[in-house]
Length: 149
Image (cartoon, rainbow, N blue to C red; front, side, top):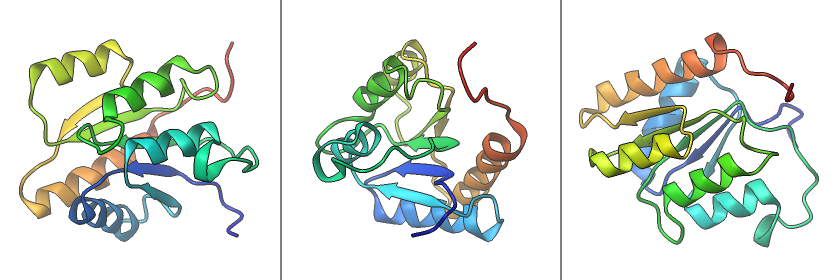
């Protein structure tokens, strides 16, 4: 098992989008440890140590969650709601990375506490650049508190 904590949790059901994102982050050495979760149910099990992740020891929290909205089983808005209402996970920066341009998705995401909302570019080159830029900002430039004041 790798001693480094997971830096990014990517919650994405599209294999192509997940591959583009991971490739862009690793190519530019933005993140070493990326955990891919394929649906909202798996994401909730991971963060709250239930289901297939039951009994896992508490891990350091990731530095960033990249979350798609249109997920199978449990949608991204519900995952966001759970992460932002739980004291143990609410300070993790969550960036919505989605194809949805729906105003209600955008508004509800911010109501629930999302840190940023990005619409996935259609062009794979632009998509890779978006992933690289957001990784640089959230992992290297952004400062987060280790604990509550």
